[in-house]
Image 1 (cartoon, rainbow, N blue to C red):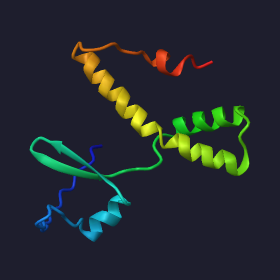
Image 2: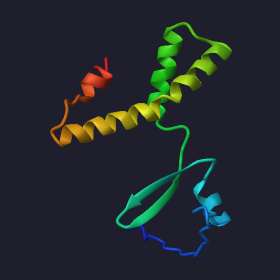
Image 3: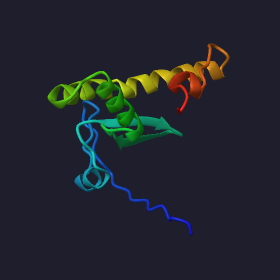
Image 4: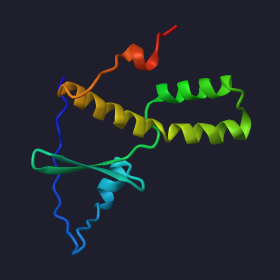
Length: 119
């Protein structure tokens, strides 16, 4: 069973400062917050909401590590939030390094190199 893609168009104004307003319906439906990711692809600009909580697996690993370090209560919550903010930049850096490795301009790491064994 295929899922039909619904295309909806709306013309919006671009200000003199290159600013746009996302229509309220789209803003609400897609769950935008304070940030949007802007992507240039095939002569189009795609906007999508930035999700603060990315990947439960990373969250679980961060929590397990912090608990093992002895954090608990409010200190655990604060340290978790600090560590979670580092995940996205780290992944972006890894993707940049992977792109360079694919071009033959750098070294690469395996899944095992990054995350270790599953034991």
